[in-house]
Length: 288
Length: 115
Image 1: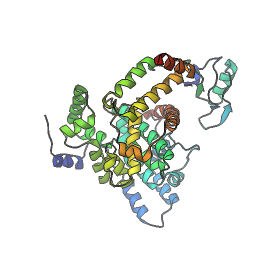
Image 2: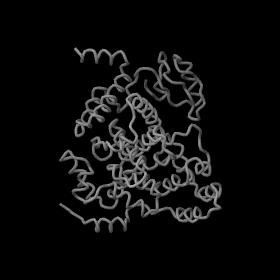
Image 3: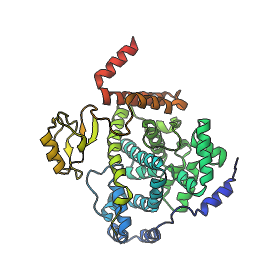
Image 4: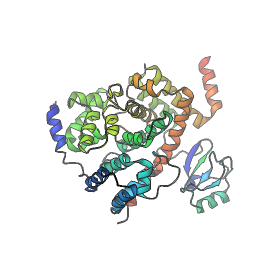
């Protein structure tokens, strides 16, 4: 069995060649945000110079997992409503999701579904900036995408082994790689300078009790992952519902009647999401 | 309650939710019974999907309820002993049964199981 040391894996992932490079605009935006005088309008204008990116971004922000009742028509409007953390993460991960959509529709749908569920849970739990929680849900399995792109033969080994042993992908990742997709995703997300409020839930979505900060956000992403697997929307690499962390559940805990309402809301949004994923087909991409 | 593309809508179906355009413009309220004329008018106004009562259409790739329930149970197998997750599984199953067969059917089912 191939066994890479944590260091070797870190190295491979640091040199990650197989994923699309970050759009150059990210560096420029980071510089701009450091300037206190920058406004959403100024940032929006810079992003809107890239029409393809703008179109992708507006499709994402108008998708049902953010759940704004009215259409968001401009990037500066999106920045005001969703905040820079969300927009930056969507820009950074846009090319990765494109790759994933083409290579692994199941995982793509699982990610969108988890984002949807995380947003619903966060709103009900009264968490500030629920859109950030949705975005953390969207990228929670980033580690799987990275391993698949960078170490495809090992990824296949993990999938095959998980199927053969009827165990979760995470158990096999620990066995084969020595670390789980949460840690891998967080490592890469930190390399991309994504905010900790989003990185920590990615890292601890299977062990939210260990989350050093943003515990409620981690708890929402953890339970959103469980919920979306439970209803069978998308495919996260194995069919199992992951174990529940009761400490995390204690932080957000919903009653039976609340859970019923959550299921109804989720069902409605997943139907809208199906329309959205159909609309994301490549031929429907932005006009140059 | 089922969400269907408007091209699969037929006269006699009843709207479970209001019919609206993708831009959110509401054209027709919940409870309205569809007619051929109404479907045509809604379609011309740009409505793409409708939410109708019951489960009148089997969509391509859609699995029958019995299979969905079987797969639901299988997904929960490794965590079956957890009381919270067990409750979640039962809640999802009940929700699907009500969606497709109605409250009455679930009550009967529970009554039979209780005997």
